[in-house]
Image 1 (cartoon, rainbow, N blue to C red):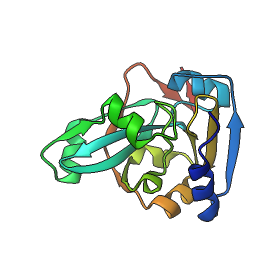
Image 2 (cartoon, one colour; image 1 turned 180 degrees about the horizontal axis):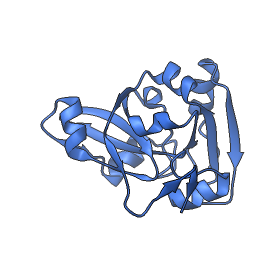
Image 3 (spheres, rainbow, N blue to C red; image 1 turned 45 degrees about the vertical axis):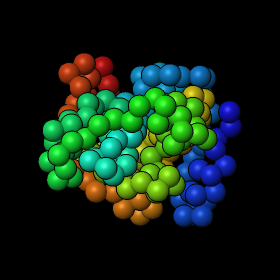
Length: 167
């Protein structure tokens, strides 16, 4: 499956300066980060959520875990649930499962992003396939998506970051 044409048209129309990175097939954040030569902290993990009745994307570093309770509090909702696999296939039908890009507005969704992403000047993300990734500046991501930034994630206990090196 090639990079979705809708993604390319969207970021081109928004004048995002990006790099397209082809890599060997990768199915985990660790493998994607290794393949594109970035830390898991720089690689965005995208989680499609239902915040009460509203569909949104939560974007956080791949090194982090989503904190559902903090997310509910930040959004002022009673319950946050994750999309089912069927919902992912239907909503992001131009993407392979697990490769949703960071641009929620492409799919009519608002974005809430972890403040932990702000530690890096660039953001790497999946581009709709298990062999394509992209990189853009954090400024471009913010300019295009206008995400709400909040403390919605914590560093996963198995990831230790030291001087931008991941162990």
